Amino acid sequence: MTTLQQNAPRLTDPEISKKTSQPWITCIVPAFNEADGITAFINALCHYLSGITGKYDVIVVDDGSDDETGLKVIAASGGLPVRLLGLSRNFGKESAISAGLDQAEGEVVIVIDSDFQQPIATIGDFINRWQQGYDMVYGLRNDRKTDPPLRRFLSRTFYQILSRGASIDIPPDAGDFRLMDRRVVHAMRQLPESDKFMKGLYNWVGFRKIAVPFDYADRQTGSSKFNLSRLFELAMTGLTSFSSFPLRIWLGVGLAISSVSLIYAFWIIGVTLLRGPGVPGWATLVVAILFLGGMQLMSIGILGEYIGRIFNQVKGRPNYVVAERHGFPADPAPK
Ligand code: UDP
Ligand code: MG
View 1 (cartoon, rainbow, N blue to C red):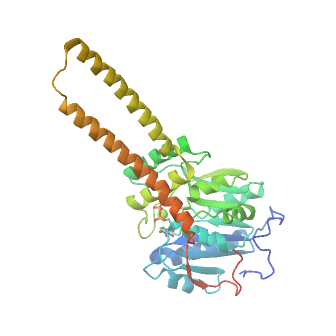
View 2: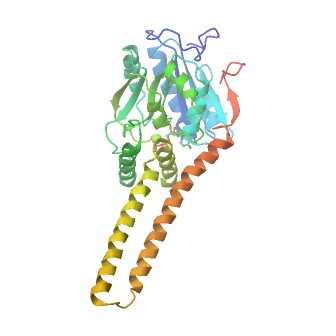
View 3: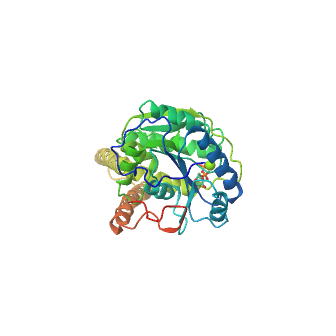
C-alpha cells in the first residue's frame, strides 16, 4: 500500500512532464450526509486505484454533513491514503469540489461522487485517455434514465437556454465526474469567482478535452441531495455567470411590445378619425398596464439576479471555510 511521498511534486508546478504510466492520482470525493455508503465507497475506490497505479490519494470533502460522514471517513482511512477535509457548513457541491481542487496534489485529479452512481471502473478509461495526451477527460452520461422525468425535462430546457447565450460550449450530459491534468487544476484554482458553476468553468479553462461515455447507475444508499430549489439555484448561477442572454431577451421583448403598441396606436387613431370617438376601452387599458407591469417586474428581477451576483463577488467572501483537516501533511497545501 502506498502513502503520499513527501518529496513528490506539488500541483502548482505545471512544468512537470506528464503521461507517466503510473501517475499519482488524487481523487476528490464531495460528500454530504453520505454516512450510509461512504465506507464501502472509500474501500471500493482505494481497491480500484491501488490496482491501476502505485501512488494515489483520496480527498473526501465533507460538505457540512449532519450525520457521521466525517467520522466514517476517518475510521475508513486507517492504512489507506485517505484524507478528510471538513467544511464548516454545507457550502454546496460546487464549493466542495473547489475546496478539494485547492488541496489536490496529484499529477491527475479525478472528481467522483460518493454514491456509486458513477462507475469506478471508468477511471481506467480516463487514465488511458490522459496517457494519450488529453488534459481533461469527462464522463458523458449515456442517458438520464435514473433522473425523475421533471428533472430530465428541466435540465434539457436549461442546457438549451444556456447553449443559446453562452460563449463557450457546455456539453449537456457531462457532470463533475472527470479527470483533470494538474495543469487544468492549476488553471481552475486561479479563477476567483464567488458563485462557481463548475460545469461552465471546466470548459472555460480550455485544454484538450475528450468525452468518455458511461452508464449512470442507481444510487446505492441515501437519496439525491439536489431538490428542485437547489437545482434552480444552480441553474441561475450557470445562466448568469456564463450568459448575458437573459438580459438581452428584454431588449427584444421591449422592442416587440413597443412596436406592437405603436401599430395599435395608429389603428386607434384611424378608427377614431373614421368613426368618431368610441367608448373608452377599459379592458384594453387594464390588460396593457398589467402586461407591461409584469414585463417590467420580470426584467427588474433578472437585473436583480445579476446585481446580487456582483454584490456577492464584491464582498469577496471565500467559497468555503475549512473546519477540519485529517490526514494531510502538516504544512497546508499552497493556495
Ligand atoms: N454533495 C455535496 N454537497 C451538497 C450536495 C451534494 O458534497 O450540497 C455531494 C453528494 O454527497 C454526492 C455528490 O455531491 O457525493 C452528488 O450528489 P447527489 O448524488 O445528491 O446528486 P445527483 O446524483 O442527484 O446529481
Ligand atoms: Mg448521485
